[in-house]
Length: 248
Image (cartoon, rainbow, N blue to C red):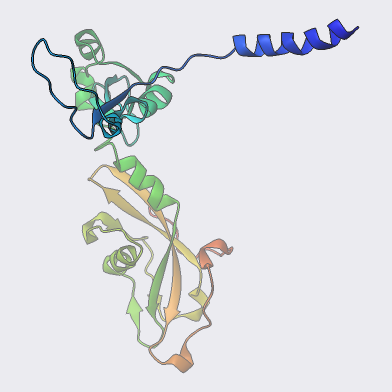
């Protein structure tokens, strides 16, 4: 009975140690103090304790791995287009490009295999690797367009340009297409109502930008109450104003 009691834990310990995997690490060290020299054919001088003090030069376990070069098989947002040779971090390459089958290793055979044909070069779908990401960002926000409450105005592209600049986006006026219907004010019936405009990126991609109209007065007593996080609130479309059609 005692034998069974003591043997069973030992078996568990033995099985647990057999599952351990050896990890090899390499550390590059150098002596902080040079050891004493000795002449040829003489007995080496005894080293002191300070001669056994080392400084760490390199730890291969935390050494930064070099980037990997791969050839893209198709367009990848934020990375590149088909046939491009890109150099990125190994972790990203393995998990986001190689495993999903979006890229192949950079070899002369793969470069020739996935190169764009003449027909694909003529049919441009993306102006750059980051254009679609910009489109997604613009279409995910609600742009606050602040207009004067006291003076008459007519909405123009430069109003949208100024509002985009306040939101952290920079674009030209000729890239902004307003709705066909005229938007003018001040009109408190249009307060906090939405309309859409189109922003053209690199003369190719188009983003459908959602805008929300707000009135602001220079007189503090005439200002409307401040609405916290207005983009999270439900809103109605601006009357008789639709979104501009995207050109094909």
